[in-house]
Amino acid sequence: MSARIMIIDDEKIVGDMARISLEQEGYEVETFLNAAPALDRLREQGFDIVVTDLKMKGIDGLEVLRTVKSLYPGVKVIMITAFANLDVAIEALRGDVFDFFPKPVKIKELKESIKKALQN
Amino acid sequence: MKIGGKLIFSNIFNFLLILIIGAFAIQNLNSILTKLKFIEIADDLNFSFLEMRLSEKNYFLYRDEGALKEIEQKAAVTQGVLNSVSRDVIRATGRQNYDLLERYLGDYLSAVKDISARHSRDLQSEERLRVEGRKLMEFSDRITHLERTKVNGIILYSKQVLFVSFFAILILALTISHFLSKRIVMPIKEIESIAKSISAGDFKIIQKDIPNDETGSVIRAINSMSGELRSREEQIIQSKKLASLGILIAGVAHEINNPLNNISMIAQTYADAYDSLDRGQRIDFMGKIEGETERIKRIVKNLLDFSKPKEPDLAVADMNGIVKDTLKLVQNMLDVSNIETSLELGAGLPPVFVDGHQIQQVFVNLVANSIQAMSSGGRLTISTFTGKDGNTVETSIADTGKGIPQEFLPHIFDPFFSTREDAGTGLGLWVSYGIVKNHNGRIAVDTKPGRGTTFTVSLPAHK
Image: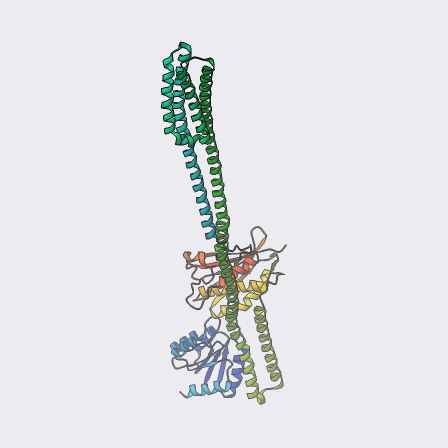
């Protein structure tokens, strides 16, 4: 069974492009523009990895991280952000984020990070 | 001449004047005393002369030979008295009069002696006696009268001189106080008004002729301070502009990073998945890249608009448009801070005649403060409406933040006043106030601690 990856980013292109690249690797990918429906989906369907943007309207990436970790501690969370700031990075690390990518994201690096997360 | 020197000079002058008047008064008094002393002596002498002439009358009327002896005795005594008071008499009437008096007395005495020595009553001698007696009496009366007149004259003269001196001193004192007022009080008043306008943020300088004295040095110092403050203020406004630009750049950088990331990811995917993409997908990818560059172009344009030089560039504008443009600049800051924004734009607003960029800067500053006041999120309401009298266009920016404590309210528009513990410069409201004031507008604040703050910018409608 192939690994399931959820991508949350309010930029539609991020999800679209990540889906094409990751589906090529054989992963099952679902993309969301908002965190709320994504978390709902997470409760009905298990995912192995959640890739989330940090700054979003409504529920932001840190809250997604906390929620995911409290519901499913085994799920790895990878964060991407256009707004790199040390305080946020520290808070993400404390929240047990698996990896942290500043935008613009290198898709190859993202793939490697996902591979590593799945091996763990 | 310096004011200090002038004051010392005028004081010395006044002192000398008083000294001279005093000396004059003492001298007059002395002279009056001398004259009065003489008049006293003259009264005594007159009395003696009168007695002599009484005896003379006895001699003529009653043929009393003894009367001549009495006259001789009295004349001798009077001569002695006259000699003993000679100094006083000379001082009062002059030597000439004294000599004359002595001569007339001597002549009278010699006439008496002449008659009594001859023991004969010839008419010639008797006539001489009468004539000499009358001359003596008349002369004595005349000089006494003259001295009395002189005393009156001196008193009158003293009165006049003292009267005139009183006015001279009065005028001098008035002149000095006028001078003081003109040279010290007036410049101080001027300095006071300048100091007031400086503390109100208007860095005027005193343009009038600057006197070359102590107040002149103060005015020069104030002028140089004011000029220095003006240039500092300009530097501060400049750096404040840079600071607000910095905040915007941080927001804009974030904003640009998203389309940049999108372009990058499209390009990477395009290269990665080239073989599996059909023609339509490839064209769609390129279209998306084009769309993202359009996004960046718009952001850069906003940034350039904001960073243009802030020379007042008045133009007829629509306040709703300015508000909308401002919102584009701050939208990202608001999103990042979890703040919901609602716009309540009034319909049919009269146009305004403003520098749109400067008014945008005011709104950006106010929104930045609101964001700061709502650190845990909240709601920002921006509304525009026509003022009650129809002559103004009002824009209110209301937040649901922590509010401004009552004791801070009088200071919020002061430069460098900040309640923010972070990097707040305390210049945002001050700069905003200056801009609104330059537009003949008003900026008002209404705040409820714990409930929120509303800033209302009121600008004159363009007729």
